Length: 571
Image 1 (cartoon, rainbow, N blue to C red):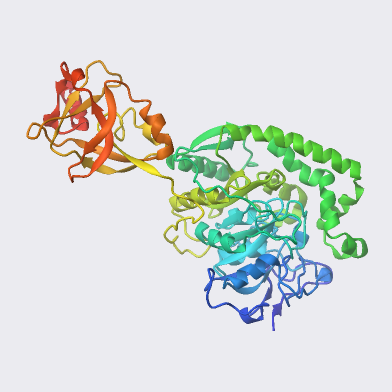
Image 2 (tube, rainbow, N blue to C red):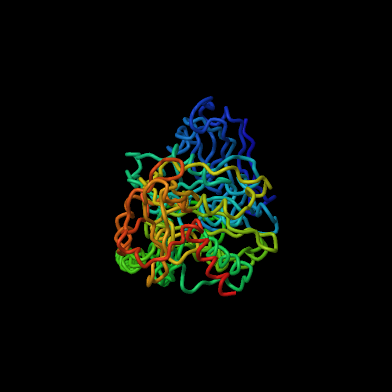
């Protein structure tokens, strides 16, 4: 028999807890499959998502019903071999971003129980962060799949709308609801997404989406709001500055963006006729059981009654207008990067000012689904006060694999441990949806070497260093006069007249190779070089006619040694 949590008649929490119902795997509708893509993994489900034979409460005991069929996404995970361990607590009717709006109790932060866990998927985040399950399903309308991840040092994958069917999910705002995934690593979240995704003709908002299969460019551009708000939290501000620097170390270039249109979109979610969709989601229950709904959820849902159809059309037009303004930023960036949450609040603070503080937690999340973006929250830092800080990577619909590829590299670059478990991150795993681009190997001998003036022509095209090597003993190297920046010329000579010359080999995406070659000035060119091991590679060569007045520096063995000799001579 499943174990159920209880709530008092007055709606006050008896005790903080993450679980509403815990079960043995065999009781969770479908017996665990011994094989499959998710075999051996355990999971939990937010209690606004149906599981056959277990009550769905949506955080409201009076609303509870017991479905005969599991939600589409839950069944796909069970069919893939995952074992369901129970259903988790949430902000009632998925209405909140803090995790305290539940008659089953406030869910504490996994790293400091005085603080909120974030919501509305609070229980799902908590049981993942504390290692009780391998992954968990949440939902995300305004950030409920991201804020709890950022506040608990775990990954929150908010897929493109419609990528995972929401059939069998109690709606919050059905047109923008997403089933989300919590895990301690990006690789696990991706593994779950691969099994959960799929078109569902019975879900009116399900979509068949073509996901981008190429990673972001090696020299990617990431948008950062030109004006950031941390509500006085200097630790969060410092952590975000550190995140920007880390992204730069991964090849990114920050680009300031105007956040105003996004902030205006975010405000529409609760301050316009769009809130009527929350009322519509539970209308039949709410109109007859309004007193069973706790505050401030009750007031938020009730506000939806006040709007007319004309009001809704007006705000839909305004949303389109703001969306057009926001789209401008994508011409100059590959992705947007924001704090997942701007600060942390204690449970006591949240209860004292539940509406204003909740709104602040959603400062960087509310706009995402309204504008049809994909998002991934990843851990970024552990602050000096012991609280986690996360960032969210955001890009247009269909960018899920791209976000995962970069997000995994970023997460591992932090050196953080998993959630609240203290366990180190495992080795990175390839993102199966990302196709490795065709490349060409290029040998460089002079100004394009690592740390030299023209190396940026390689890195900005996504080239990566393979390693150092040397030519076969059939080459001579010359310092070309009058070149800016100074460059050498490499010449192949007859057997017995040359020597080995040091070089570097770089791997460049084939699509960028043509633009790179176009930058090579005469008398230099690209040809075939023979390496010391007998293999050949494309690389820099020089016309013999240009070398009559050039200094032969072959005896030094390479350009880097020549540059060092010039510096030594000036001392």
